[in-house]
Length: 88
Image (cartoon, rainbow, N blue to C red; front, side, top):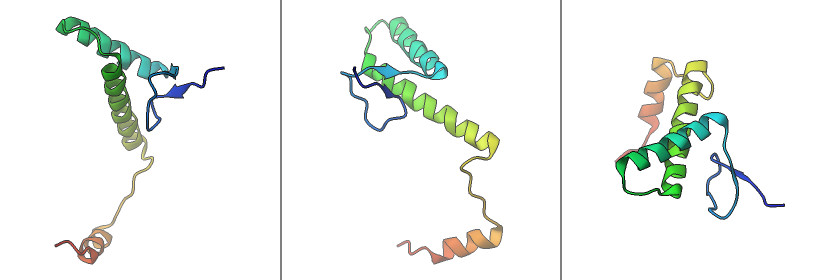
């Protein structure tokens, strides 16, 4: 059995099957359509990279909308944090 991978993985192996979530598959198909319209041939790996990038943006937007993975600071906490940084 061949091991499958997803777009969320750090490194994509072109020799293995990629399982796309429905939204990722749409982004991938859109990227292929875009390449066809440009008339320069199809670069599957580029389409995968672009779909992966766009899917990550979509996930981060959803995180912001739902408040997941968001760290909030009060003005005082932020000022303390900034003042503690040793930026030269």
